[in-house]
Length: 214
Image (cartoon, rainbow, N blue to C red; front, side):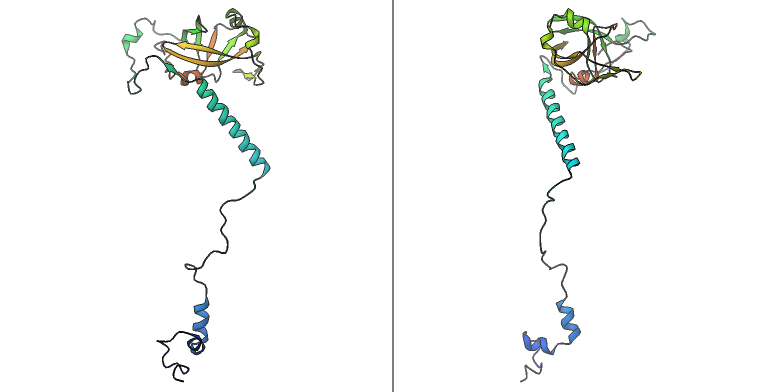
């Protein structure tokens, strides 16, 4: 009887206690605690993506695989590679054989498939290595080595130049040997090759037109 009257409410927990508690207090205790409530469901990932996003991601993965393959093929095989921490300096002694002032481009000689090729233009503004058709014929590589390509070249004036094809050749600069892709085009240039910034970066070269060295 005493328990039913609520005399021992502080010591007893059960239905009798709930019945004697004020209505507002009971409602307040039944409210969910946001800190202690358990989630109804757990969503770990969103399944299904828009078709356009899926296609763009697939294209990105293809381009990434192509870039990794090209990086592996075009890796630098250094016979005596300098320490990467060695500082590179140019001073007036490097200008002893250069006539100042000048506006000459940087032109070097490279060994390509065991041939010494002179008048090779180093062009950091080009994204591709360009080979004229006449140089391709002089190297006596053979037309069967040409691979088709659908990527046109854009000149400074925005005009499209349709390439004949692409070819991969070994290029030796000093003691560094790389396998490079060349775009063969039907042009009449002043140089035998044009080496773009991709090759410059892969060979870890620093071109300097003022001192005429790389």
